[in-house]
Length: 622
Image (tube, rainbow, N blue to C red):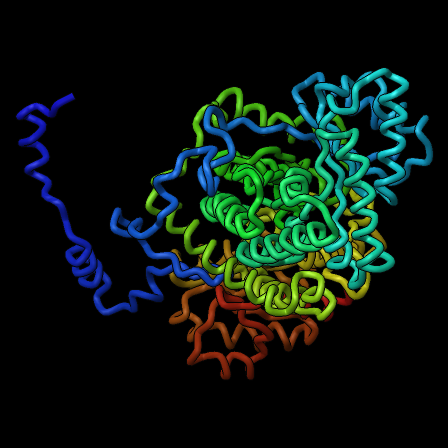
């Protein structure tokens, strides 16, 4: 519809503003502050993210004019919808109970069931596990299996007894010998044996279970081992290419291999970066497959299964995990995932029950059925920000992919220790950011629920891999260990440490620092007493003694610490040499005099919270 004269007049009042003018105004507003430090975000991925992007930033990106469902598939694999398979993961501890959970999940919206098989000894057991499930409609996914060739035979026997055409059944096996090497530091038996097993599975599947994917590149293991987004993507591409090169070299057709592969990516809390990562994965995989000259362009269409992050899930305040899972589900859906698993809120300390399983499943169902994220294909397309993130992540991941190829491929990179070494560099930095609370963990490293106890809620030990491989872990575990140690101390008859918060002087500063102190010590499970305003030395000593406090935190402004703080510290130490005296803040000019007066620690925003709390644990005897 043509614009009216009135519209033209309106837009004349808002002439275009050039990038140069924007930059001039920003520089003026910064008043001499460093532009790069203040406004450019530099996450651990190695990205430099600008404060804003404009249409001109989309120039020279040749894939922007492609359509959904078309090479290089950056805009998604489907042109008509953005739907995905809703998967439910079920840990099989008991065959009958797992079957009951699967039927319940399917009845309530699950479209695929992912069975984590800790044991399975016969075709009869598999039959009982699948009893009542419509095998032609529900996706069947199997992981943690000793032998996939044996499982194939069992599944075919079940289908034969039920008179079901195997070609009408779809699902996947979790075969990933490279992933095994990552976690265990070596291949299961030998690399050559693993590929021979893969060939055997391919033969069975290509002739019978034609709806099954065999190879699963578990990029989620990189993520849950502490890798950055770029590392997760770069190493996943290298692993996928290793499978492609090796299996085609052993005589398999490239189109057939691609059809039997899936990538499983974790989706973390970096909302827009995760959208961009999945889009970049499709782009780069299409480019890799193109080099093998497949018969069909669709061979380069990456099948992506996403699973919400384990790395950021917490033991304490577990209901926050629902919020984390929701944003992660949105990222995956908007990015155009093909299948999705949402981890249950209690993943950190037990296997899912009916309640937590239902919540994780309904997270997907609500976002699909009520917010209609399945209706819009590539909703992120054209976003200046996301398109540039996609391009930047793709560029850095491709560079890492080439580094791995220079080492002879992913197998060599794993055996040489390169992959583990690179991830550990990132992991160490991320751990430091967590310890310093630069990367806060809600409910664990900040704003804890002080009335919560979780020690007796833990029902299983987390699986972390084996010595020599990359250890899977959660970001919160170090802070959780501190608080669990406090709980165990109390359970064994110890007294929960008490923190006495003493305030005086500037009202705003003392209130802010009292809140900061309560938060600081609360994450270790200490009892933080209600703050008291300083009256006089005798009153203070009597109050501290009555409360049997282990730690006294003095809260005021830096200027006011010049009054009373040294006197308070001296009096406390004279009364009880073992009591810990803490200053909330970092009054640089007063630090040495205050230490001489008896101050043991200064806590502030630049403190290594984890190490500081460990010191207090050690002093108290926890």
